[in-house]
Amino acid sequence: MPRYRRRHLADPDYTRPRLDIPDADRERITDALTVLYGRDKADACWSEVERLIRVHHAHKTPEIVDDEASFDPRTRFTAEDIVAITYGDLINSPKMHPLRALSIIFEHLLQDVFNTVHLLPFYPYSSDRGFSVIDYTEVDPRMGTWDDVERLGDRYRMMFDGVINHISSRSEWFREFVNRNPRFTDYFISFDHEKAIAEKDLRLILRPRTSNLLTRVETLDGPRWVWTTFSPDQVDLNFRNETVLFRVLAVLLLYVRRGADIIRLDAATYLWREIGTSSAHLPQTHALVQFFRAVIDVAAPQVSLITETNVPHADNISYFGDGTNEAHIVYNFALPPLVLWTFHSGDATILGEWAASLETPSEFTTFFNFLDSHDGIGILPVQTLLTESQRDELVERTYAHGGLVSYRTGRDGRSVPYELNIPWYNALNSDDELEPEEHKVRKFLASRAIALTLPGVAAVYLPSIVGAHVTAGQSVNEKDPRSINRNTIHLQELLNQLEEPDSHASRILLPFGIMIRARSRCRAFHPSARYRQIASDRSVLAFMRETRDDQARVLVLTNVTAGHQTVTIPASQLRSSAVYWTNLLTEQRVRVAGDGSLRIALDAYAVWWLEPVSG
Image 1 (cartoon, rainbow, N blue to C red):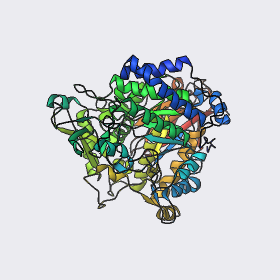
Image 2 (cartoon, rainbow, N blue to C red):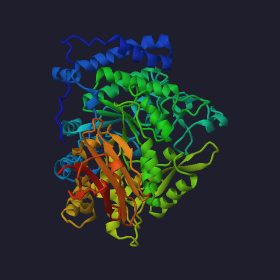
Image 3 (cartoon, rainbow, N blue to C red):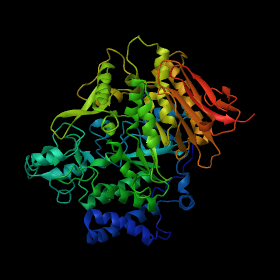
Image 4 (cartoon, one colour):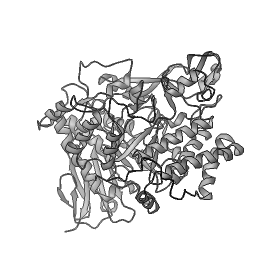
């Protein structure tokens, strides 16, 4: 799985011919700019965009240029793509920088498990564990250096965060705004009084928080009220100002040169604001994503864009665009709450029907399948997939299992649940002794297996690789619900736990690693391989994954209950003449019956990945 990267030049080489950008690419870029600024201004913006692309090109080595010229976008994603989502300072060790300690974890404990590392914001920040960025261009010195990041990128594909919806109130950009530097007065959306937005218009705006939208700040010229979607410390950028767009583009291209293979557009939902609308998913919002995609296609065609939009499923997948012009990857935000509901109810019906409906607009796009993250389990994505009472049950379950819940302000002015803040292991399992520990571990692994096997790129929040969880009596910060799942791991304590084969961490890591390795070796788990639902009892999620050339297939069976289940798959659904099917996870071989059907007995929370074999 490990890969080896060709690094960009530290300084541009202007002795080589400058890049000529084809007319068709220029038109794509200016079309997106036209939606934002009108045609005349879009044409005026082109020269600066062209300059930034050409500067970036001058940092490429001849080998990088050759690699890009021969790149086949059909090979962008494979079954080997397993992403580890992690903070740069997840691993704590008194003897070394956190990024170095993280590298040790990947090198010695997770060999051949992941091929991609999503390094959550590792820039200097003032709050929100990295998502209130002070300086986009630097590595937080408490974590390490750019050399540490690039060394990790020498062996793994890297995913960086573009936290471009907002910036820290302690950033230089905002400090210059407060100082009323005329070059920065339009970097942010500001008003001269608190009631500048009418109450009726405020109620239209989609917010993921209950805090005030406008935050008062004292400036050289007196008080101003700035737009803050997320918190008073996270001030929204104003992309109506094309200079902001240019500076953000320069940052994203810097990330490419520093090793980013995937760039995550954080909070893409809210990038453009229009009073009198929801200020979410606006045409200009999509145009911004299209602009960044068009530039990346020219400047760094091997790099992928992923949009982070924690919203109802239909809105979420709209960021695929037409399959060629927006995100390459979209977070599958409905997956976590649906999987949680499945194990809560012991019924895979809703999850199965939803999974059967999933599709992307082209073979060049795919889903990002995850269950937990540094944030939480969103409720908004299943607004139309689960009933209100079902969503309420998940909220009650979260509180009962020791978790917290984040709220947002609805259009009626009331606070409504937005996100379940709880480690995934706790979300599934209560911290009591009513259920055997073995069942809790098996349930956890069964849920992870679902995310590994659905169409898309699989991702794992790294603390879950050892089943990180909170225990009864452990203090949690109710003022910052997300902090419950943002703890650090002490390196030596983890190593000590893993030396004990019966420890919780060991009982999770070993089988979890086996599942991931088996998944990455199976061609039928290619992100674009077909998905076919298999009719079965509601207690079992059953489906077939098949490559487009029909040369490989795998039957996936997951028992979502603590009871024993028996499943019979008729020959008409197997569509194979194989005499035997082998479980990729255990190498257990099962012979088909005389009528060509396959009969499998599943233990509690059992996972079977069956591949047809001859002989």
